[in-house]
Image 1 (cartoon, rainbow over the protein chains, first blue to last red):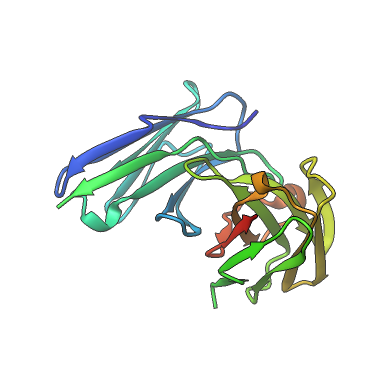
Image 2 (spheres, one colour):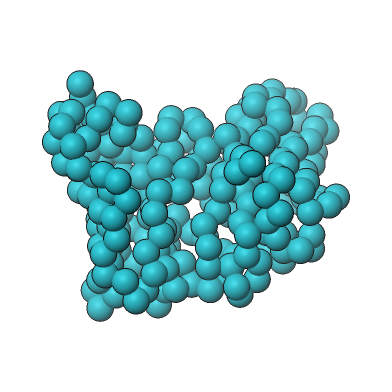
Length: 110
Length: 116
């Protein structure tokens, strides 16, 4: 299964601190995607990293990918209260199917 | 327009009711999806439509019936649901379809369904 497993399941930090979450998966992938979900709402795509990339940045987000270890990490720098959300990784092979990891619930305290 | 819209936002129905969820996108995307999400769990894929044809059915019970009337619309018809079907139902779309679908998915805000 391409489904990712995320660690930690929950994370509580103070505003301004960095938050790091990890994703591991089991099979070969074309890319790995990270999504954010605010409470009870739809998912928002954050970043896509291809299998031949090792690191990617988008604003305060930094994603790494290590295909030899079948793992990825998402770093949110200088966190804000608005970053409070659940974060899901989705390792993806070619084709339409997208399966999500269990998610990391991040709470940023003001 | 990069928005996927879903109606209704909330739906309460009895086990004998028939209702429909609607999803719309005007981004010219070739694939559309239905997901089911229970509280504190990740979304689970239910159905995928590629080029308006059902391409993936994740062994979903027949009380859920998807329909894709055209390339912009996706419906989910509900009949004889059970209380355990209560969940957030998310619609999504993506530009690519089939094996070329390596791109991202755009999600709607979801329909919160409660089955009494």
